[in-house]
Amino acid sequence: MNKAQLISKIAEDSGITNAQASKALGAVINGVTSTL
Image (cartoon, rainbow, N blue to C red; front, side, top):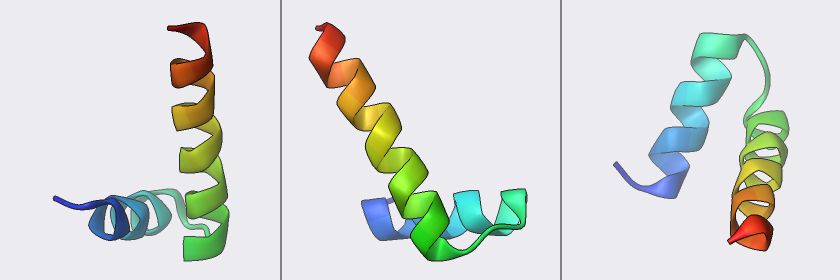
């Protein structure tokens, strides 16, 4: 699964747009990497 597929899956499961899912995933990734 690549990033685009993950974004689509998050959007589909959450009932949000791909843009919103992309933003949310980006925030999670940034949060994880900044704490490492």
